[in-house]
Structures are given as structure tokens and as C-alpha cells.
Amino acid sequence: MTTMTDTSNAARFREFKMPDVGEGLTEAEILKWYVQPGDTVTDGQVVCEVETAKAAVELPIPFDGVVHELRFPEGTTVDVGQVIIAVDVAPGSAPEPAPAAAPAARPEPEPEAPKGRQPVLVGYGVAESSTKRRARKGAATSVPAAAAAIQGEMNGHGAVVPESRPLAKPPVRKLAKDLGIDLATVVPTGEGGIITREDVHAAATPVPAQAPAPTAAPAAAETAPEPSAPAVVTTVGARETRIPVKGVRKAIAQAMVGSAFTAPHVTEFVTVDVTRTMKLVAELKEDKDMAGVRVNPLLIIAKALLVAIRRNPEVNAAWDEANQEIVQKHYVNLGIAAATPRGLIVPNIKDAHEQTLPQLAASLGELVSTAREGKTSPAAMAGGTVTITNVGVFGVDTGTPILNPGESAILAVGAIKLQPWVHKGKVKPRQVTTLALSFDHRLVDGELGSKVLADVAAILEQPKRLITWA
Image 1 (cartoon, rainbow, N blue to C red):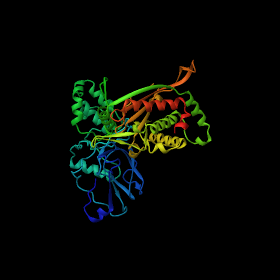
Image 2: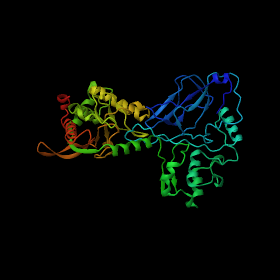
Image 3: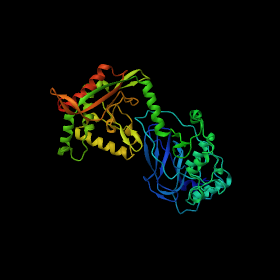
Image 4: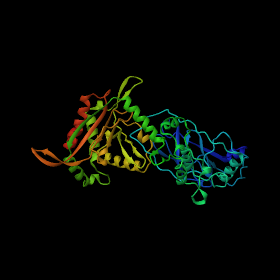
């Protein structure tokens, strides 16, 4: 980190702060840096990817220049408003004098930034939250070590580790801390004398009592400062694996608990013959009007749910606890649970009720593609009114889905299987699936919920009703 002490330096270096990238969120975790000190950047260039409690977002730099400093390593959770990168907007000017020591106002990160990060799990949906993580406490750093780190950063090589300190990456240091192992006592086997995870486990094996007691884990999780390294899976001996709960996973857990214990859930089920729907899907795939879009059973199911909501509009509502009001929505933002490398997220199609079948197919394709690429924005996951979750893709018959916070209903679609079915008085092999509709019983009574589910089932059994009922 550099200290600007005169007007010329103040004009030369510009700082980019962590923005509020998601509807009032207070923090974000730096997943990946796309630039390093010494790299040239231009206005609008993406410099890093961050993860909020809602999604992963790429951040563009708003000015031109040369990267002078990255203030935080990958894996660090940073408060909104904190400076994350400094850029020299007047390269070629007289070099800035190096300070004698790092300022005490900002905790120093671990000596080595992690090389990469595996995506974390995402759940069904997130609620707006004012929860703010406790600030990290930086480890004490000597003046010579701080000066060496600063000099290393100015040379474009990142932080420098003093030779007297055991060589280990931040995740390995975190593992050693969890297991109660002093790295100075560990025999390194890694290239260049670096201590590996295996070295730490080997040191821990003879003395299992040093591992953290399982009963103490919940309290420690509440009070211990969070590591600056990315979430890592910690194996305690051979009998336990501990996965830090943070970021999106933490927000999802809180949202689901809040939903489950706030909204009185009711779930109803129906098993339906969807043979005609499957035939319609096959025909639409050959229709020139559907060329260029993906056609699958989910498209017809989504359209069926939209028609059912049009016929029963009271189901599309929200509960306003503060004002003790039921808020009926005259639009449908249709949420679709999408499996991604980060886990299951629920972006929604805005104003889906206004879209034709080809438009809905295009929207579904774009939604799923964007989600799988990890580029879903927080705005795309906000404002949903009703959701579909297709558990059938995992071979599951059905389930009892939990409502997304602020929504009135969620439809689970089970696997479509060939089963014996009574059709026109005879037992025949037919394509059959089971639907499950969970709804908020404060908003939706049994009659209304049954009507919606029955309408969806009736359309899937006789898809020509899409024309007569729409």
C-alpha cells in the first residue's frame, strides 16, 4: 500500500472502491483478479470478479492507467466503500517515494495470495439482509516485513515472505491453525521448502488431541475472525470434513430458515399423464417459428403455470408484514431454478406473462446460459413472484420445495417417466410426471392452491388448452 503525501501524487493515483453491486449489500468477496500491478487498464475493463450474497459480479475499472496496487488478495471479504485497487493514471511521471512502513489503518493480508478459487454453493434464493460480518483482525507485522512487502508490491511481484517465516500458502496456514499445528515444527516436502496440506496432516496425525473439538465448533464459528483466504475444505483426521459457511451459501441458509419459519407452507401433489405434452415438444422442435431457440418440457410447463396464474391471479401475491397487507402482483416475474457450477440459483424472467411461446423459449435459454456461465446479475435474481424448480433432471419424482422469500408459490416438477397408465379404459405405457406446488397459506388457501395446480396439470395433459385458456 502506498501513502500519497503531496498534491502531484494525489492527482496521479486514483483509487477504485468496492461498489454496492447488489441492492444495499454491505460486502463482497474478491473471487479473482484479472490484472496485476504493472498491467495497463482502460476505462470499462473488467479487473476482478466478486461474489455478493446474491451472485458473482464482474467489476469494470472506471478510468485508464497502470495498476499500481491490489489492496486485497483473492478470497478476502471487503466492505462496500473500501479501496480495492489503486491505479497510476499518469504513468511515466516521477516515481512515488516509498514509505518507511505500512499504515496501521488497514490490516495487512496474508503474505501470499491464493492462486485460484473453487465456486461456492448457491441455494434456492436469497432474502435482503442487513447482516454484516465482523471485521477481520490483521496479524501483527514488523516494520521490516511490511517494508519488504511494500517493496515487493511496487516491483510487481506481490508480497514478500521473510526468510525466517515458514513457507506456506494461506489455505495451508488456515488448516494448520484449525488443527493447532505450529508451522515452525512442520517438516516441508513441497518444492522450494513450501509446507503442503499433506505435511500439516502428517504433523497432526500423531497428536489428534490438538484438533479442534467438534462440540466447540459452533461457538468458534461465531466468534473467530474469518480467514482472508478463500473458503477451503478442512479435513480433521479421517472422520470429519468441515466446510466454512460464508458468502452466498450463508445468505441462502439464512433466507431458507427465515422462509420456512415465517411463511406457513402447504404442499399439494398431482400425478399427470404428459404424453401429449411430450409430443408437442417434439413437434415444436421441428417448427420453423421456434428455430434457434431451445424447446423442452420446461417451456410448456412454464407456459402452463403462466396460464394458470392468469386464470387464478390471486395466487400471484406477497405478504407485507410491516403494513399487514396482501400485495397482489399484476405481473409475473417467473423464477427458474438453474443448476450452475456455483450451485442452484434462481434468476427470473421479468414480465414473463407478456411473452409469447417463442419469446419465453428465448428467455429461458438466455437465463440458463447466463447462469451456467456464472454471469447472472443480482438484478436478475431480484423481484421474483413465482418459481419453478425442475428436480426431475436429477431423476427425482418430486419434492416439497421451500418458498423463495417474498414469493407466494413454487412449483416442483418431477422426472418424466414411462409408466403403466389407464388411458381410454386400457392400461398403456404413458409419459407420467408428478407436480408439487408449495404455497404460503396466509395468501393462498387450499381451494386456490388446488385450482392452480389442477390447471397446470390439465394443460400438460391436454396442451391444446394453452390456446383455449390463454
